Image 1 (cartoon, rainbow, N blue to C red):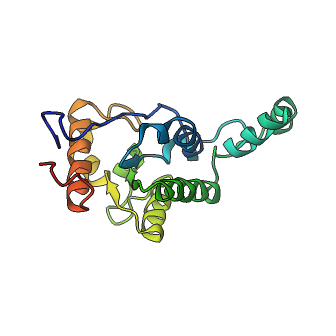
Image 2 (tube, rainbow, N blue to C red):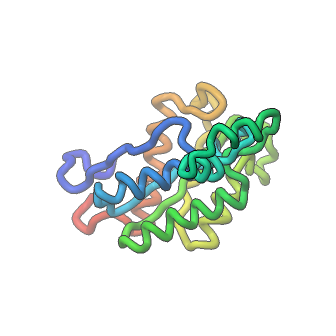
Amino acid sequence: LLDPSGETIEVINAGVPGYSAYQGLQFLKEDGLALEPDVVIASFGINDHVPWDGISDLDRAEAATQGDLDELVKAAKGEERPRLSPDEFLRVIETLEGLCGEHGIAFVLVAWPESGVLSAAPDVGDVGYLRFIRQAGERMGVPVADIVPVLRANPEFLIDGCHFNAAGCRSVAETIAGLLSREGLLPEHAP
């Protein structure tokens, strides 16, 4: 959308289905920075608030580095908690933004909706961790591409609880492209 010839802008989709913000942070540290991005567009929240096996991603990572994962799993059986609590989620998002800032990389958040926004009041719209994404963007002065209006205007885009069909993905891409352009995050010689 931003560079049909592909001469000025390269888009690398480093998204991994099911990743939480913590896993995205680890990817950025281990592999993403080596790609030398000018902009990192982060879309997290849905996998972060989903309850799993009672172990947060942070606890799991800590236990794995200490070789205590089996004991942690045994201790957590029967409990449910989100993969990242709201506080953990916000800390990880702030760490992502800080890491990008240290490397001169622009950081953009995406407020990706779930099907629950369709039944939420129009003035609410914050289902799951959407409010935390918006809070983080406001607190850090980071642009947020809000996809909620896209879904509300086109509920047929949703193919399940949170994934969009091809037309929906194109609309999301157009929303993000518009934000990048408005925020001046495109190379000067880009269209």
